[in-house]
Every structure is written in structure tokens, then in C-alpha cells.
Image (cartoon, rainbow, N blue to C red; front, side):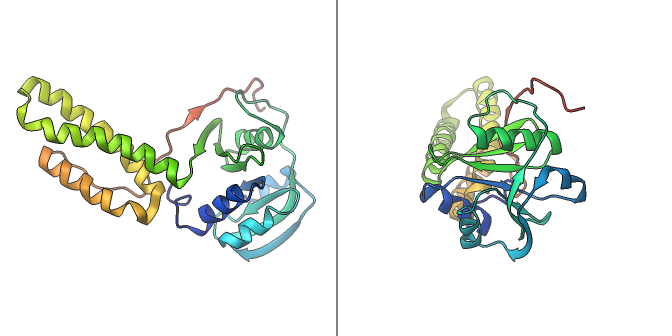
Length: 225
């Protein structure tokens, strides 16, 4: 899922256009026939997912529903009618609807806040804030600075201290790997630097394309029967 929402993909670029233009949106990432009771109104379509198509769909009321492969828009102007569970931490009506839909179906739902220009991915009872490219780069910079410090100090620390530092480096590499997947092609130079640092430290590491989001878990006040 993180690769599907990486910067540079039509889906993520469309979501970023919605954010930049101060629009609100709900985007359901995949569906099947069992989800039919969730949908009300709207119309079926079969349009390729492009950044402009995602942005244009957000100009209408209701949610945009993507195909299971996430490369086609399957429905537009569709209202979501999930069961009235109330996940903790959900925000306004749009985010509450997204959280309920994700909790009921397990399908990822992206909510874009018109007021705060915040983008949140809901999946099951979990949520993840999708940062802007600038915000994500700042997070990556913080992780890389910590990793570079371990690399520089590696030759001067004792064996016992070194083991602890290597464990810390492994954790940092796992963390930055996920961020680089989300950053997309723009992260290639940093990925190469990570590989060099890992090799110098004697750590086994290879970039991934399936890194999970660091998720915040939310509890529902009422369970889905």
C-alpha cells in the first residue's frame, strides 16, 4: 500500500493536487461486490486513475471509489453509509466516515481535510497521516542524520557500545526504508547512501518496495457484529 501511495504515482499526485487546492475528498482504495451496501447514489465508471481524474472527482460531492487494482476509478459521487461505529481520534464528518468505512470493511480509505489540508489513510482500525513531500523529506533528514552520526562514530566506539549502535542503525534503516518507499523515485540517492552505510557497518540491508506505514491504532467504541 505504501508503494501504491508513493509520490510520483498518479494516485498520490492526484491526492496532493486535492490538498494543494484546498479541496476535501474521500477516496476508497478498492472494493468488491460485498461492499455494495456501503454505497449510496453516485454512478459507476471505468476511468483510468490519473492525477487530474482524482482531482476532478474531488470537485463533486461524495466519495471516489477505485478498483481493486487501484488503476481505475470504479465509482464517483458515491455516498458511504458504514455502520455507526465511532473510532477514537476521528476528526470531522469526512474523517469519521472514512474511519468507519475502513473499520467495517478493512479496505483503505483516504480522507483529505478541506479545512486543515491534512491527508489521512485509514485502514482497519489504524490510521496514518500522509505528509507533504517537504514534510516527508524533513522526517527522512532527521533519520539520516542519526544514521550518519553512527556511521562516523563507528570506528571510535568500543565493542560493547558498538553492538548497541548497530542495533540502533538497524532500526533507523528499517524506518527510513519505509519513508523512501513513500518518497518514490526522489529517494534513490538516499537509498544508495543507506546501502553504503549498511555495508560499511557490516549490516545486511536492501531497499524494499513493500514497507508498511507506521500506523497509529485506534479503538472503536462499538464492535462491528
